[in-house]
Length: 577
Image 1: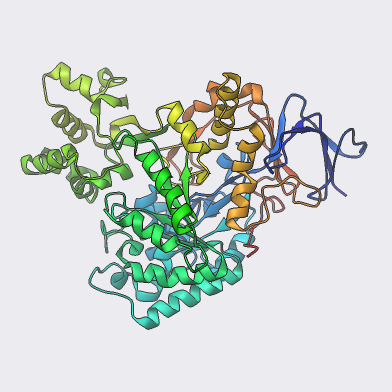
Image 2: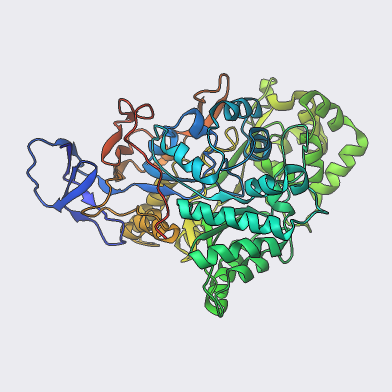
C-alpha cells in the first residue's frame, strides 16, 4: 500500500469552511484520514508547516487539445497547483473530424503553429468519434486530470462538411441537426460535460482552403443552438459560449436560452467578466445583467473571470485582438512579406485608421498606443518605449507610427499592453460576484501572447492582501471553494474536495510566498516544437507540492520522476450527471 502523510498544514477542504489544523493521510491515491497527529510510520511525509493544504485547483477554460498530444504532462498548469483541466472550449475540440479540418479550425484562433499541429494530428489520431477521443486521452500519460466539452464547430463541420459549415447561406437540414444532436447525446453518455459554441466572428480559420472565414460555430443560427441546447437542458449538462460583444442582442439571446421559466434552467457559462478600459463600467453592467437574468428569468448564467490584470504580448500583429478590426484580419490573412507591402499601402492605412479610431463599435482592445510598449525590436533604441512616445519623438501620427514600425520590422517587433483588470478594486468586485467563475486561462493557446497558468495563486494573493489590509472580499476558505468544489459541482465532476474517500488531488501552498513573484512572465521553450518559445509563469517557492491521484507530481519546484511519461497521475474525468 502506498501511503503519503501531509503534516502540520492548515487544511482547507474546498467546502468554503475555514482551515483546520489536521494531518492528511493518503492511501493508494485516496484520502483515508483527516485527523490531528496521525501516526503512519511507513508513509512518505510532506511537511506543510506554515502552508495551506487545499484540493487541487480546477481550470475550466483551456485549449490544451493540441498540447496534450505533444506533452501530456501539461506541466505549466500542474506546477501551479492545477490538477484538473477542461478542454474543448469555444466550439473547438479534437473529438471528431479530419486532421486538416481540425487544424484549420484550431490553429489561427488559438495561436498554435499549424505546421506542427496538422502532422501531429495525422500521426496520433486513432479515434473517429467523441467517445473514442476520450478513450484515446485515457491512454495518454496525463499529468493532470482532463475533462472535455464537445466543440460545436467540430461536430458541425463533421456533419455538414467543412465547406457547407462555413457558408452563411447554408443552414443544416433537419437530418443534419438530428445527427448533431445524436452525436451530442452519445458524447454526454460517454462523459462529456456539455457543448461549447462560439458566436464571435473575429475567431478565424487557418490554412488555405477557407482562410480568414470565421469558425463553423459562428455561422449557426440561434435555432441550431437551441436545438442542441435542448439536449443539454434535459441532461443537466453545461452550455459554454463565446459572446459577440459587438452584437446588440447577442447577450440577450444567451440569457434567453439559459432561462428557466417553465423549464429547467440551462447551465450556461460565458467568457468573460473583465474590467476593460475600452468599455468603462461594462463589467458591472454585465455582472448586474447576469444577476437580473437569474432573479427574473431563472437563468443560470455564469461569467468566467480572471483575478489579475489581462496583459498581452504581440509579435507584429499576431494577436487575436487584432482580428476585431476588418483591416487587422486583412493583414493577418497574408504571409509576413506581403503583409508589409499592405501596411505601406495608403488606401489600406486609411481603412485601418478609420476602424482603429472608431469608438462607436464594441471592442475588446482599448487601442491606446500610449499604453502599448515595445519589448524587443531590431532597433534597440525603441525597446522600452510606447508607440505614442516614439511617434512624439518623430513628430508623426501615432497610428502611422504603429503601422510604419509594423511594416518595417514585422514579427520581429514585439510589444505588450494590458487590456483589462488594471484596477484592484474592480478585480475584487469581479471575483466576489456570485455568478463569476474563477478561471479563464486559455492555457495551451496564444502561446506567444499570454500566460495565466497560475491564476489560482493570484486569487489567493488578492484575498490574503485585502484581508491583511482590512478590506476583505471573502475568506481564504471561500477563495479555495471558488477554485475547487464550486467549479466541480457546477460542471458535474467528482473533484474539488479534500475529504475521506475522495481522490487525493491536492496542493500545498506557502502563503508567505504569495508576493510579487507570481506576476513574473518569462519565455521558455515549448516541449515538442523546436524553436518555439512560449510565455509561462515562474514563481518558485510558492507551490511546495502537488499531488494528482495521490501521487506526488510536483515537489520543490521540479516534476516528480516519471511525471508526464508514466501513467498513474491524471485520468479522464467523466461527468457524473
